[in-house]
Image 1 (tube, rainbow, N blue to C red):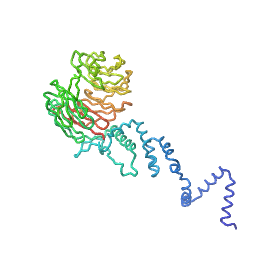
Image 2: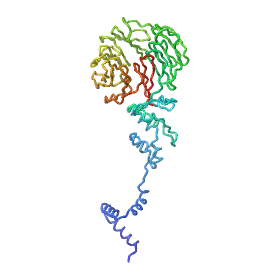
Image 3: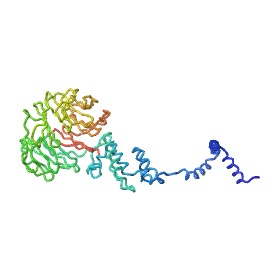
Image 4: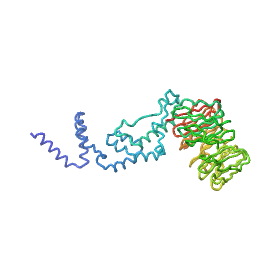
Length: 463
């Protein structure tokens, strides 16, 4: 009788004579005859043969190139395979590219999403209804090696975007100090200056939520407006005087028309309007002013000359924004007008609002406008109304546009966050504690000022 070895050798000899298809069919039939324990033994023998890790066999550069074609979600799954794959996927250029695709490269410049910039208070803070936990404040130092810089930025920017989309925010302690309504605010993300009808301006530390200086001397009347360029701020007072203060010390540097902030010397006086000036905005060396004489004027502050006079509104223009190519104005005649910044020609007139246009914002793709008719409208530069956004009750007073995100503020304490690509309402800040007529926003927070007496300031943090 033949031994086991002889039988096995004969079986293998016959197996080799079969075609590829016959061999596969025979193996399938054999596996179906095996018991579970026999299959386990077979798997243990085959596992080392099948586990070919290309990451360990290819040069790093080739592996990085392969991984660079993956989206962020798949790349994160790769890191869960083993330490080698995590190391290969933890590559700065790969995540830098992903940040560029999402428009998050800006977060790598001034690092507004660092943990040091998270606003932390020593008392419990009110949160949004959807906020189960505070915005994430996590450390990557526990991982070895630590997560690369651009991956850290991507993760934090992703959480920040989700916070905006879902209404996940916290409210800082209300800033109190003004005895009268607040007329204007200016902020750079760290320092806030508020101008009040109580004859003073106040300087606030946002991170600590406290007033650092009261700029009450030598103001003799209501402070109507303020601009901030640290370490200086400029206030405009109803007593007709423009003053420059040092926000670090609270000292008045100059009682300062166009002035030299260093010397206090009068540089230019811009004359041309025949009625009260309603709105003023500056960019580089140019200033645009709107007036109750129904004109808009573009001034060159270097020469003191009026470069363009724009006429087309039948009432005063309440708001204006401009860049190097175009000027966009919104008026009491319910119209938005787009002008060439080079020729002064009106290139588009946007009609559709049924109330005065009090605020607007634009980027390279769209124009957003807010009106007394309680609506926000999104326009193309060709004059086509893309979306009519209806959520507010009363006048829409403030707009802030950042990428695809639009923040609108209006009466009834309501702040709405919209997606400009879809026209979808992302969320509403229902718990803004006060009325608002001024709004400042950056990538991580909203700051609102109240027209009530006494004036208060609310900081809403999304990070």
